[in-house]
Image: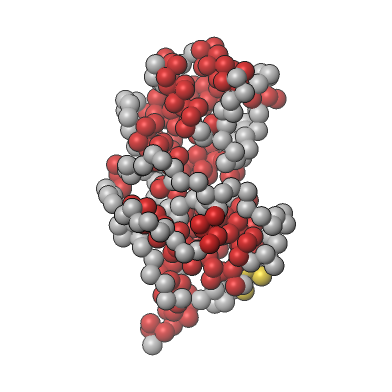
Length: 328
């Protein structure tokens, strides 16, 4: 009787939600996208039979597995010294541009990146040289506001360099080290120009890969625009629940839903999906359903997926934050 009641209580209807067919697709997508990850690891010739996943690009189910996150951990956070200010400076500099090629060029031209040797003019000159050669220095993953009203510089990257300098000089590293939980860290990020709610959550998650903080990834979540679109496609009615409530619900009931749909999800060495991962899956399912379920238009009415899947030639040597004690 206890088991039956437990299963019933995990049901979406019991939580006050009205799921659509896209909600089942959410879990099926998670399983198949994770299978692709392991098929790549095992060098399988066929990654998936799913024609949508064959054609279009989707991020990994676990955020930490994506190429940019892996680079952040292996080449930005843990490669250099352990001074918190230098670590935070590197994280912020890398993530504001969020582009591996930009970081590589900066590191090569500056012979290393550290706040101890930061000089605005040197960094500005390197980035300006890329722009003058028509090279994009920002990733298209999210749009960064310019912060020109605060710093008054002509070019966006100049304002962002000054913003990062202000964050370090403001003692942000020390404040984060004293913060008691992820929500407090998130709120510290929001104090600075150009840092909106979605970016603040992403940045505090990235910082938490380092030793500066030691938050649980189950402490706090913030739904981004893509996740909100995915949630609206997965549920016709969410009642009085917030988008964050729903992300927490699916995270806490993941095993029930995989079992309910008779799905075998390949966990990351027994590590369950965290809030940030389930938030991300909603975003990816919002895109996936444009093709799989075009009758669900979502917030912006987009009907196609822009990015096609292109295999990367360079293999990733997967690594994780030291405090996770995780290997694959």
